[in-house]
Structures are given as structure tokens and as C-alpha cells.
Image 1 (tube, rainbow, N blue to C red):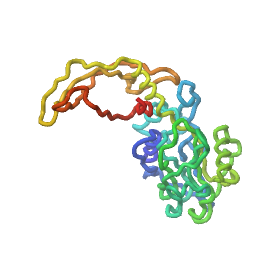
Image 2 (image 1 turned 135 degrees about the vertical axis):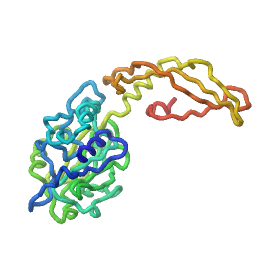
Image 3 (image 1 turned 180 degrees about the horizontal axis):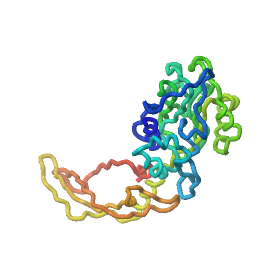
Image 4 (image 1 turned 180 degrees about the vertical axis):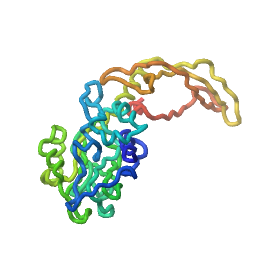
Length: 330
């Protein structure tokens, strides 16, 4: 059940991440006497790499042209452990148009890594570090440094972006066979990975070209784990709200402010009417390219403090966040 919990957090792409842990109800499999390899298969019924591009479906109404969709039948093994979190996967996940810009990527393997032998932070900027994240676009292709951790007794490698990934970007995460020493000397490409790399889709193919051009790999045979994915649009909706607010007259107070003279200033309390852009279930939904349209309104309490002396208008400092870069230009 704990492994289901971690994927819930990674879906959201922000806040604290919980490390994947197999838990008491998911005993570790015996990998046999062979080398370490990625414990991934497209037909396993669970998710052992993240981001998982198989969750993407085309959707022209989103900012990125795709949407995430979790099919209970495709992931029956994982679905059996979801319990009260089922709605997060079957409903909430469908609101996302890509993967989180802050979310960790992870790969689960058949055997453990020695965490002390894995690169960390700035070391992952080296093309031959053996693991990491690359940004394919926008801008010039580049390596994006990551913080590295392990869980599942060392079987799962987690990579958190050292700083947020760009929004609406094409990104790839990888582990190469160059980390063999960290597994005790043997790390190989699994048959499932080999098969998937033999016929990559357009997104994966572009990412593989970048890995070669940056010197991360000489050939795809060096990849022990790999995933290529898009990130979320993030700012589009809030910028649409900014545009709608700017098109409206400035809000007025519901009633005259009530002001009280205090020892250091005059304190005034008031209320004004603000617009709410969310649907009845608390989610803001807007088709790509469409304007933001309020669904209802509500009253917002506001307090401001005026100097005891002087003549208005008074110099005023305003601080806020959440409306994107456009707010800083006003």
C-alpha cells in the first residue's frame, strides 16, 4: 500500500515526496542469480518507473495537447492496493496535462545499489555521471542536475530536480550501465528495456538523440533504465485569470471601510467582491486557448493600515504571488 502512496505524491508534482517502499504487503521478489536490471515491464500491471509515459493520451483541449489517464485494467496489480486513494488515480490524475516540474523520477531495479557510490547534486551535471535528467526542449538540450536517493532497500533510485524543470517541456530521465560498480559489478539492460528501445516513439527517439549528442551514451545499449515525458503547462490557467481580471473594472468595497485609530496607525477593515473561476467541485477547468470565465463570486475580507499623519495618496507597497510573471510587470 505504501508504494501506492508515493505515486499519489509524485502525481501531484509538488510538496513533500514520500519515498516508495514495498511495505509489508508487497514482499520483495527474488531476482535470481543474474545481473541487476530494471524491474520494468509494460505488462506488469504496476508502475516501477516514473514518469510513466504510457499514462499519456492525446487531448487537444489541454495546454500541452496531452492528458494523463490511469486505466484500472492496465494496472490491475497497483489498482488492487489503492483503497481510498482510487479517486486520485481514476479522477484527479485526469486533470493533469503532463508530469510535475518538481516531482521525483524513479526507477526500480531487481537488485540493490550502494547509495554511497551514486552521484549527487552537481555531480549529476557530468554527462558520464550514470544517471540524471535531461531537458530536450524548450531551449538548447541540457543536463538538469538532480538530488539522488534510494529506497526499497536500495532497489529504487529516486531523482529529484535540483531546481524546477521548465513547464511545457520535453524531458527524459535515465540510468546507464556505467553505474555497474554501485550494484556490485553487474548492471545490464533488461530484455524489456531493450525491446522498448528498439522501436521508440517520436518523443523517446528525440530524447535518445539528445542523450547521444550530450555524450551521456554512445548507444542505447548503455541504458539500464529510461523514460521520456512532457511536463505540465503550470502557468497557463493563472495567466488566463490575470488577463480576465485586467479586463474588468477594479473591484469596489461592499461597504465603506470601518477605520479605528490605534497607537501607531489607523486600521481599516473592509470587504470586496472577488470572482471565483472554479467549478462546483473546486477545480479550475479551461480549454486551451479559451479565456478564463468566473463561475461565481465571493466576498474577501481585507485589512489595511494608514499612517497617523500625512496626506493621501500614501506611498503603498503591495506584495503577492501566484499569478505568474505577468504580475511583476504591472
